[in-house]
Structures are given as C-alpha cells and as structure tokens.
Amino acid sequence: MDVHGQQKAQEALDVEIKSFFDSAPPLRNIENVSEDLKKFIEMNSSGTRSARKVVCVTSGGTTVPLEQRCVRYIDNFSSGHRGAASTEYFLKAGYSVIFLYRKGTCQPYCSLLPDYPFLECFEFTHESGIQVRQPYSEAVKWAISEHHAAVADGTLLKLPFTTIFEYLQILHMVATSLRSLGPYALFYLAAAVSDFYVPWESMAEHKIQSGSGPLDMRLVQVPKMLSVLRSEWAPTAYCISFKLETDVKILLEKANAALKKYKMHMVIANELLTRKEEVTLVTDNENIHVRRDPKQVGDEVEKHIIEHIVEKHSTYVDNLDQKVSRDTGS
Image 1 (cartoon, rainbow, N blue to C red):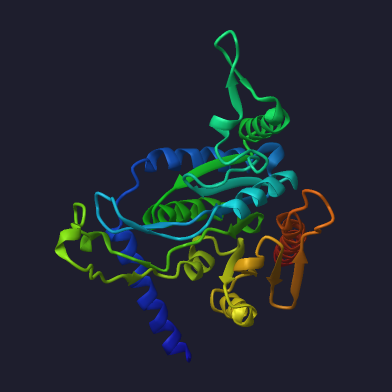
Image 2 (cartoon, rainbow, N blue to C red):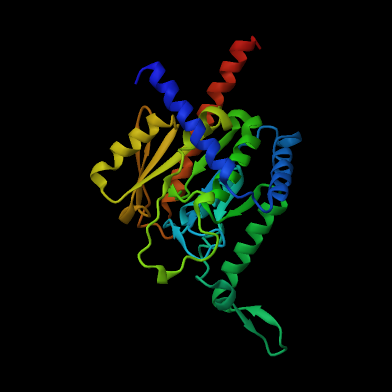
C-alpha cells in the first residue's frame, strides 16, 4: 500500500473509532475510574518511585450485548488465568500493575483456592463464628496478605469491565493516563476482545422475544484499537498483544502479521490446547519458545513469560533513555 493508500486507511479507521466511542453508552462510574487512575499514576511517578515501571494487564473476555437492557449477549472465551497469574509475577518483579479484568474471572493470588472459595474455604465454629477450614488455611492467608499488601502499597489497581464498550473506554483512559510515563509504561493485552459488536443505537431496547422467529442480526467489526494505542494513546509505551489460534500451522504466521500490522513490540502466540504449557514470544528479530517445567511442582508458563518481558522492557527503556541523553547532550 502506498502512502496515499495508508493515509486513506488511517482516516477510515479514525472515523470508525470515533463512531464507536461516540455511540457507546457512557461509563457509569467514569468519575471514580478517572480519580483512581489519577491517584495511582501520581503515586507511582513521584518521589522514590520516579523510575517505577507500570504495566496495564488486561484479562478475561469481553461481552457483546444484544439488547440495551441486556439479557442476551455474545461472550468471548477466557478464564482470565493468564492475566491474573501474570499480574502476580509482574508485582514480584517490581512493577506496579493496573489490572483491567472481566468481572467474575480469575483474580491475582487466588490460583491455589477452589473455584468457589467463599463457600468452600470457610466454616462455622461452635461459637457461631466463621473460620478458615484447615485444608485451605495457608492458601487463604497467603492470598489475603499478598493482595492487601499490594493494594495498600499502591502497586495494584483493579478496574473491572464486562462489555466491549466498557473495556475499550477504560483501556483508552488507562493508556492516555500512562502516556506521561513514556517507555516506563507497558501494556500486556491478554484480554480476549470481541471482534464484532452491535452498535448501541442499533440494539433493541428490551429483551428480544423468541416468539418472533429466527434471529437475524448484523454485527459490525470492532475497530482495531491496537494501532491507535501505539500511535496516539501511548506512543512510547512497550506494547505486547496475544494471538490465540486453534490451528498451530498458521499460528506464527498470524502472530508475525499482527506484530507488523499493529507495530507491537511483542506478540505472544499460543495455541488453544497447549496454551498453559507453552507459548512463543514473537519479536522483530527473534522467536522465543517458552515452556513451563512439568517436573517442577507449581511451575507456570507465565513465570517464564514475565521473566523474558522484564528483560526486553528494561532494554527498551535503557535504549530510549540513552537516545534522549544523546539528543539533549546530557
């Protein structure tokens, strides 16, 4: 595509993005989200934390409402485990984390707890009190202490979403807020984001009635926000996206295409059936195959992913800092 063609394509994308945000229902708690972000960024970019790196981890799948007063929706498959586990390892590596997560999905520090921890981890005592059941005492103690410590220390901010509208509006707010951190900001976009949606003004207001017969509904493609995230929202942040496929034969090809098209710094390629065992980190100059060690109890592939990312991001920050020093003559 020549320069004129690229300009036309960008103009068309800009129109699509503007149309999406203009027609999206406003966030109900936008003032609270904005204030929480402001405080978090200030806390992690001043005083002794002036060089602290901040990562936005997105996690879980977005829903596409089919009605304005939503009863039915289309959902994207994602347990949120990768985002939650990665958040733990980022915090351990010294990052502050904005955890943008789907309500009801996996949470940091909860991987050792059962699926329904509130019901399974606690029991009544003879004095009509409540206590942690013995099999889960250490796991509950660890989860609570680690989570509370991260929140109290100001290194973990959790922002929930459900719909595609909420997710992209909050992501936009996070990205523009992190712009001031320059290369010290990192995006780890592990959420399963819907590719298609029903524009708000095209939705039925009330529940669609099944007695009306077969449902014929037109879905519009969600504008590709990755390119505008890189070029406008947070242009010097280090950006990582994910590519999930069910056919391993096309996986690396698709990941490389996404790397170039959206100008990502890294694309993490994972195949559906083996995603918890191994992934490939695709960059401009190399592909890094990462596996968990099945012989090591409790080893997770996310641990090794984050180790590589921390190294790559540190190099990226150092290179940009050196460039600034050369340009300013300092």
